[in-house]
Image (tube, rainbow, N blue to C red; front, side):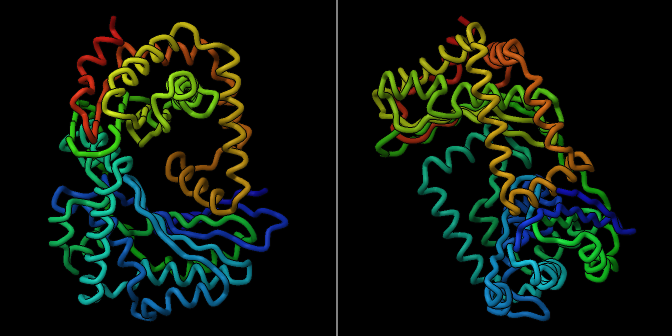
Length: 420
């Protein structure tokens, strides 16, 4: 498989990976404009803009956008994260030029029709309502807020309802003008693609654009804290975050291996001790996530009101114990899970295209898979134990609780248990 990268004179980047034997391709444009690029009065507009991309252009109606892709059996969608917004499609090889033309059209020529804005405003308000009614979703938004309070990185991607109700055409156009420059975009494609052809098409579609001023998001400052929301639910939803490395820090591989060994699968410590041995929950897991300048090792569980204390205390005890007796067998198993998950996932052209865009955004290049595997293999049991000790003793912490939380221990009590 061959990765090729080209940059147009205006800063627009094209990265492709040909995957022999495939009859289809995944293609998309990733824009360095997500939730953390918003000012407080804009909170939610990056996501609103993503929705509006499919609501009509100067050349296509909303129905035509959908029909042109689906008429050839393709699929088109988009998503917004805290650091990027992506617009992508999956089509057969012969339809790659069509997919790119549609994606360019929705990015460059949106009409932002007032009637469509009102329709989509209602859709997004329903989405916000749905999130609020999904405890194991909203608790992570609250966890993010208490980890990074009063910061763009801590705000919800959907935005608060009052902001969403106020956005108009000028707000959407202004955000596009500020952030949707060619130097903030990456065209990534994987599968049955031809690099030279895509570069030529990209030159025609994006080459005339003028670069925009570089935007530097507010630096993340993990503060931590606690948020409790009382509601009459069947379970307490418990989410704990400990500050971890950013995605350029070599320690990110240690953090990911730790999270996998600690709570990443059925053989993990948390699953075995909390669910299998004691039956305290149905769902419990740990994961390591990262941003450009910070990261989070997160633990989540849902349990009954009378068992939340025991579950939280055992979780803290297991975290302390991991610093002392995490075994080479556990680390080896986690390392194998990480590598297999990564390699299996990349059998999909969609996953490949997303990886291409992310790697170019982070590193300006696409590391060989062998390089990443070598970094995973280089993590030792001692590294993982040291990381666990750091989390238990020194890392900043944040806690979000939702449901019948009266018997849940405080963040201060959990920190004291770790320190004991």
